[in-house]
Length: 439
Image (cartoon, rainbow, N blue to C red; front, side):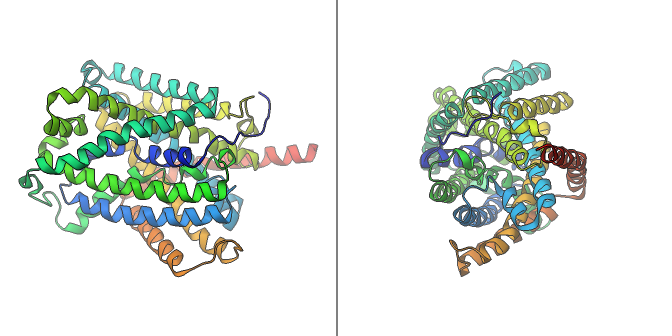
């Protein structure tokens, strides 16, 4: 593979679709079932998470103006706190990408099983289908990032159409009794909201997506900033409205056992004839989310390897400017992860993967938010104003609150995942020093 310059193929709408597409992947279509045990009070969890996510997006948008070539939230941490901190935040973020990709692939299979019941009955068949999907999207992006960007715009258009239809028309079919009891399973409203927030944040992961492939973005200073904030605001609005509608359409006990909650909700509105059409749009949406995250899973180790913080082989590009080795290697890890869990139910696998991925991402978000204070303080482009201070406070407070509320067991798993990065960091730094010494 030859080393070439990255191609600038992402404009504003492609960058926005990357943000929105990575956020609205499987979350809005699958999380209502995951939140059913919390009850309708989980809508408040969405609201609080939305405030935290939009605050984080605002901070990232300002950091992008300050340094549009940063290459992701972990790069801001490195600039402020050094190589070691930057590496471990990137390491956690990278683990999130491929573990979440595995979860997204499983969500696709779960929705597909609504139309192909055999996939729900055979764990081996569901594993095979999820594996095929991962490698198909990997091959697509190995061919050319431009193809991946085109797919991203197309899938965002397809996914938003049924969301808007259900969001507008669903209110006319809501049964107010479905909102009772509002808090069925928790002692206090705060404990219920905590439980909801830990799950709902996963749907906002991806708000920083436009910052990662910075070298592939046209006019990155303005494009990344605007795409990040606009995409997150639009995604937050869609999440809150759709969740409120679905809880009003489907009783919580039925929602909890649904493999395709959005299809069930659309059927209540339009009738059974629409189920195949809605199901197709949902599958396209989930595929688009997976495609967007597949793009990032190769970009993260590429960005690190260029700086000597990851093995050098990850910095090589194909003749099309694509980090093929990183894409393929990470997809192998995803396949191994799913093979280790394929005997469990789809819902169990999905929930386990998204919780770990969320915690590790929140760590990266928190470090980037704290780094913004140091970076923007000395910026000649972006001045620290009251609005930025407020966004930093809200974003950091949300991250700390969500991390502490995730549970000791999940935190322990994340700690072990970070520890696995130590030998990789040591090897990469030694390799980088050897290369510098030869040169």
